[in-house]
Length: 430
Image 1 (tube, helix red, strand yellow):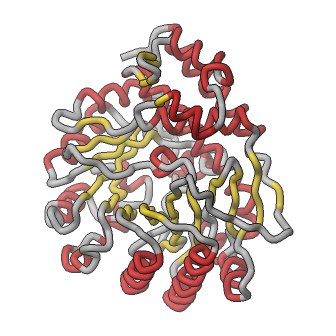
Image 2: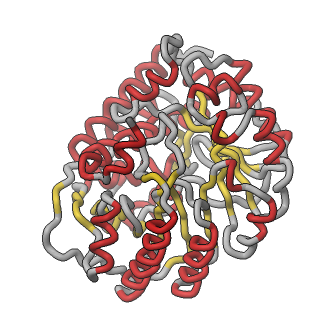
């Protein structure tokens, strides 16, 4: 399916607006003075914990990561637990924990110890964690019963040709081997999610449909379908991985194909689908507008300010070991940028309750974003009734495009700190 002129113009406008907003709002500056992150009594916060280790790196991934060394990883986890104690001492409490990476299950004993400690410190009721296919052995996963509620598994595709090009075939096995691994884990944890990527160069409709239907045939609770994110930081490595493959942009066509093929899976945000009636958070920035990040290269977003933890692994560990704050940089969003950011994340999550939104941000949404809301209405991307804004089917795609732009914009921050990373990652990426 092709977009009509109005839809194409809306997507062009949305990308342009988001890029402009990110360029102005992500004015990251070094922070030399001591930062005091303190909770407000009327706010609910989420805890994000970063595990920055991988055995090998994928060409499309821009997240903060380092080559795994067991000794250094054990030191890191110990200091991560110390940073958790420091956050607790500031008065924060959390009901939700999201663990990202890197490869989060790369050292299972240390992760178990850290999850148990986090649950001891805080009122955590829900834990989401990422994994790769090499860490989904049934016996290993049983060790996480009662600790992980939702495990998101980065499959990306079941197509062998693409798996080879993105350096995952030899790491994690063929598409058939991935299916066999996934077929053995059902019921061990409350929720399993499969992550797929679409719009790879050379990918066809048949490949996309095969990925979706294969995931549905497994005992999987959620499916998340990300568009390939070719940020300036990763564009060269993606192009190198696919060589001279024709790079045709089929993003919207594939997006429509995926949504039409979801059968018994219902959408829970712009790009995730659930088989169950109940659901767990897929994208923490959508479900939780304020969060505290711990670990190397993690972000916190508190009261309109984005804080950046030290990316360099040794620098992060030195700071925590010396009782210093790990935050090295940050920026404060102006009022309109903050309203725009939280409007996007709420709409991506499926709904904006205007009165609640206005009260939380002390704003007037319809006035502050009058132009944006009018444009979305004209494009039939949103509907407004009873003081509630919801995305239409086309609006869900607009939200996906905007969220993709947001994540690629965050690569601007990562690019700023990449030169200061340790030699381990630089060597592996060459």
